[in-house]
Amino acid sequence: MSKKSGPKKPSLNKAIPKRKVQCISREDGFTLSFFSMASLCEVLIDTDDKALAIKMGDIAANEAWRIEDKYSRYDKNSLCSKINADAGSSVEIDEETYQLFQFVQQCYDMSDGAFDITSGVLRKAWFFDGSDNVPSKNAVNALLGLVGWHHVEYSAAHILLKQGMEIDFGGLGKEYAVDRTVLLLSEIANVPVLVNYGGDIAASGNRKNNQPWQIGIDHPSFEKNSSPHVTLKNGAIATSGDANRFLLKDGHRYSHILNVKTGWPVETPPNSITVAAPKCIQAGFLATLALLQGVDAEEFLSEQDILHWSIR
Image (cartoon, rainbow, N blue to C red; front, side):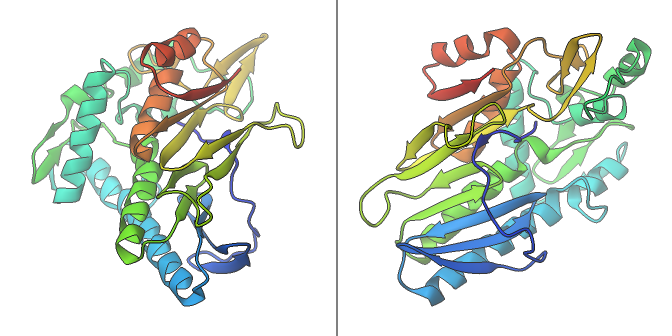
């Protein structure tokens, strides 16, 4: 569920140290920059009050880092890693995690099982590094029995995975962090804010000059300075795509977007789908669900009357 294309990533100084927030003055306000969730992140705040901007930037970064520490499968100390390591045993969860699982359940049901956070285990067979290393059918089939959210038992207090199963919040964690950041910052001050975490974006309202935010749609296929722009007043946009994650063998391009029922890549999905929605976590789900439709991605979004941008 990559975000390698779509809304332009923050153009930040890559020398920013981890777990540090950088404050840069700009016209009409400040940009607060930091690293989180394997991405360069930025929060644009339209205010003349530098102290307020710094305070809000710290709140944003600390929330992003909190969510990363709690739900990253790459952190052996995270709750996600504990749930995976203890598969076969019941693991205690809190209210926040229960609510995320409720959203996961809704996504699973709405997508007829296509959106499934247990599908990450298939990465043990698939390595989308641009090579021709396509796995065998046996290697893929051996993992299919470990995929299926319907096998998961959970309540408000506990979750139980079948032994060998895993969950992965990668398809919604960053989008959730964006929404949480917008909510927390709106409680601090009534100033225009744009949150951009690696191309997943949400705005709290028009800029202080009453103009919308201008967001560029970025993709390797665009020539320099030719990318289209989206105006955003309120709400969110999120992107899912495979511009840089694929396999290529005998002239056939294998997308990293996997059909969880077969364990094999979806045929002919767009390179990138960007979707607008009230919340970033909703936009992210819809963008991923569209990619899972393959050749019918754009038709699916049009039928749902969902504002979107597609790149093939």
